[in-house]
Picture (cartoon, rainbow, N blue to C red):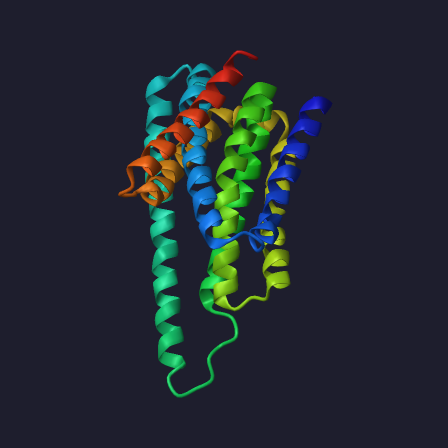
Length: 257
């Protein structure tokens, strides 16, 4: 059990450290940054879908013994994440309307509300990632490693994007890095809570794994796939290669189980 704790805490520490990727992104040229982000997004799509369908869903079926329940939880999870994301977008739009109406003839606010909204949404997402990683390690070390890789691959382009949003919202570079890191630390809190629950949490694995798979499927299909739309044929095949690479990496981990 101690080995599981070490793996889980080391994994969430690595995920939290990804928040500093924005610091390196500052020195990249815009053209290079765009090409790298496109590749990383495609790689994340493959890893997320591969982890969901190759690791998490099969494990959920094996743990449950009730395929209908697992399938229902996956569908419910996808709908839940759609509702949550829609709610966040509504608040983003409302915040923008307040900013525009209040800035007319008055001094503009230093920090745009969107900056705080992205921190709150990202913090919740990081907390859930921490729980998912810890629960995956409670299933097996191999599943935990696969989930950690998938989380890291989708966190890199997301953190670059979040860092850009925070700068645009009015945060200084150092404050944006610091706030992004505090948000990332919630992954550690999520993992600690899941591990502290111990055997109790193991009883909830059958419920958590389908929702984890649902979150990965939703992020890949609803959030990341639209970012890959391009009219360039070379870029399209480059993205397909990256997706296949991500899925292939998840499949190779099966050989170590």
